Image (cartoon, rainbow, N blue to C red; front, side, top):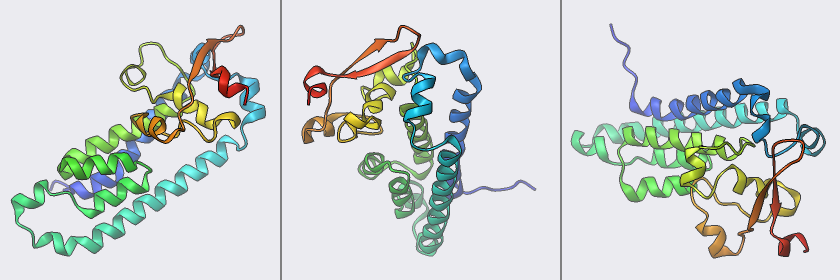
Length: 211
């Protein structure tokens, strides 16, 4: 007897699974990618305010709450969805998926989901890609040939500025485009420079550095 898994359950757990698989790929490379790192080992030891274990616990807690909240929302809306016409139910966005998008900090993605009218199954692929993009934006590497860096100006280098003391009020935009930073005046230009000891360093534009 085949085990049937609903699209709703896949919508909850597949993006989370993709998040950990893609994160694991970066971890598996270990020190072999050091020449493409945006921060030296010394910087990571002294500038990181939290440990890797604290980050891990925080991510696990956040994802657990997201999954639980999405499950409750699905249970609350499930009875209403059962009464819908089957053709409509296959293509109509549900509040369950929209709020799930909000819970994983993809407000832009959730808006795109609503406006596009994508189906529930399509949203599984979309939010899985969002998970990949979010991991890549925070990976701390500038890898040559990375298609995400090629197609999106908002990438690991761009968003790295936001995680520095001088850039905390700039370069918020995620997960895809930088237009809101430019519209709202929170865009900080930068340059990517090679470090003598290997790897890269992100430097703010001179006018911001002098502030």
